[in-house]
Structure formats: C-alpha cells, structure tokens
Image (cartoon, rainbow, N blue to C red; front, side):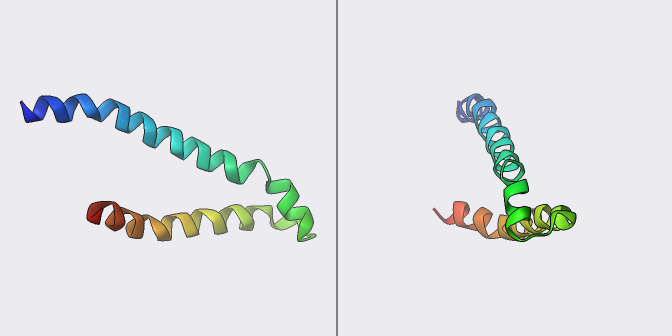
Length: 70
C-alpha cells in the first residue's frame, strides 16, 4: 500500500522539479543583458551566468540537507 502512494506522488514531484529548473533558467537569462550593461561589460556575459550556476550548484547540498531535516 505504501509503495503505491509513493509512486502516485512521484510524477507531480518530478513536474515541480522540472518547473523550478525552468524558472531558475528564466530568472538568470531574462535580466542578463541589463546586469551586464550595469557592470559595463557585455563581453563578460558568460561569467555572470557561470557565477550564478556555480552558486546554485554550491548551495544544492545545503538545501538538500535542509529538506531532509525539515
């Protein structure tokens, strides 16, 4: 009985994860030109995106452990 409940919850959980990943990508790509012009360095636009993705990857274990606790 427990496995069917867990299996029934899996598809919505996967959909939420995919949606949040898409939103995260949209959040960084939408204002990217504005961020680069405020720093007056359109040539380093890839460094801005890379910095975001590195910070995101560095915080993933922390948030994973936080969700395990709570």
